[in-house]
Length: 199
Image 1 (cartoon, rainbow, N blue to C red):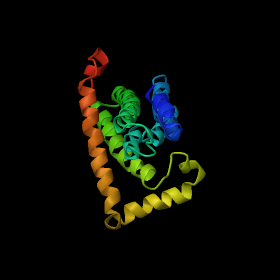
Image 2 (cartoon, helix red, strand yellow; image 1 turned 90 degrees about the vertical axis):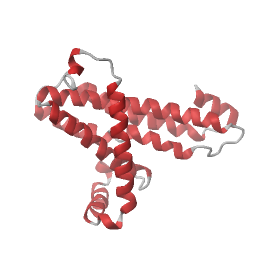
Image 3 (cartoon, rainbow, N blue to C red; image 1 turned 45 degrees about the vertical axis):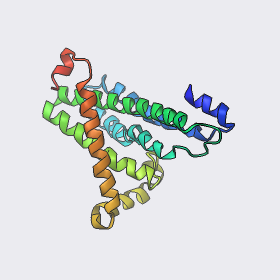
């Protein structure tokens, strides 16, 4: 594994947090797999809320590229790039796969239009969630541990958008990137009888 090679070459474990970030990225996939067995909306809604709360952790790993060349020591920059991209691509696959499962569930329960609205909305909200995590250093657990502080911060962004142009600029830019990336990924998914219904 590239990460282990980097540990060996550098003599320290600075990038060990990438393992934790990848674990967080896998949580939405696990939650979406549970959704497959649920038929009643009353049971599905709490699970979907949890999924949406953790979903930004998958594309968040893309922003770990900002750590490129930190504490590099004797490690070549290209090796760090390969390592970070490896984690980012796997995390993004986790996220897109989980979103695809949620999309199928909504298409089956409601309509194709509703499924795509949920898909695009989730990716857009994820851009905002990634901003909260990367720049404000909030995480998914804070909605439980510090709900008042987190919600008041979000309210400030919504109520005073012109005071937070960087926030909404990043949200729009990153959210748009995710939407186009998902459309590209979706177009490459092997066609099955079930997936054709979403075309």
